[in-house]
Length: 347
Ligand SMILES: *Cc1c(COP(=O)(O)O)cnc(C)c1O
Image (cartoon, rainbow, N blue to C red; front, top):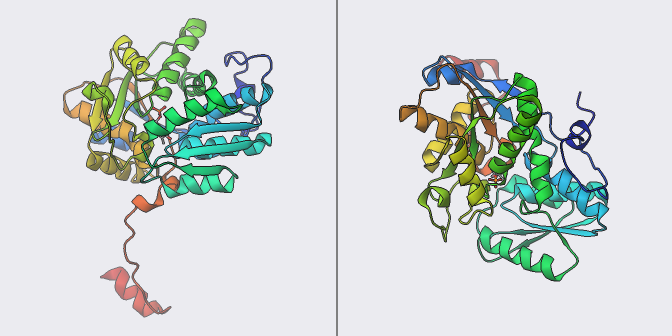
């Protein structure tokens, strides 16, 4: 049973200022699920795992960074926090603000934000403001607001977000005994890939656990780091990575270069197919979270040799976050009668 959060568990490794007031919703310590059947589909001969981040308290990995950022902000005297969000950051910020008894304001982009995420933000009590613009414009506004008003910014520009998010890398090393060989991870604002790399580097310096290669995966309609330029109107079903101007893009590209990795993009169809493959293993993730698997499939098809390797898919958010993406079949309706149901079952 999980009885402590990441700030307690990794208190010597996550660097927060003295004034921080450590919060916890017992985030982190998420399952690392072996998926040998998926490895076999990709040719076999290697170990494949899903790091199921959807089991964090608010349903995504964002809780790892948010617990650190809000702990610092509260200690510094903040009474209000604000973030721009494609949804999960909003839900997470709202949850930890509620925990700390302070106010949360979230700015969401125009267009689609997954329903489960907004429901979370609303339920935890955040004030939700939708702007008539993109995520990138929302982030710009939030920066201006926090420059001019006594409100704390908790987007992943906030360095404490990355401090907390490093804990995912620590957990992988603890669970596997050392770092995996390859990590496949969706990339939006590029905070998570940056944080994982920081975490592996820090653990390696302490315990010689090694540093993996990274495959960073963007959606084809929102792939600034693959195209090499800002995308003005990013579009993808994977709303959590619908970002055209990643705040930590340069850092992510450095991680790819340093670890001999690759930044690539996959189509929405490939993302949805990967989501179905994971669901076929009993692991329902939101579309963005399936991008890592879609990227691995693309790489293996392009000839990357993963035999003998340990590969981890970072599955960032829970499938329940985005129920509208599921095409619900019209249920077959029958009277509560054995004969009628039997006829359907044997048809
Ligand atoms: C935020 C988020 C991402 C992208 O993470 P970045 O740090 O912005 O690259 C991917 N998947 C999900 C589910 C997210 O919530």
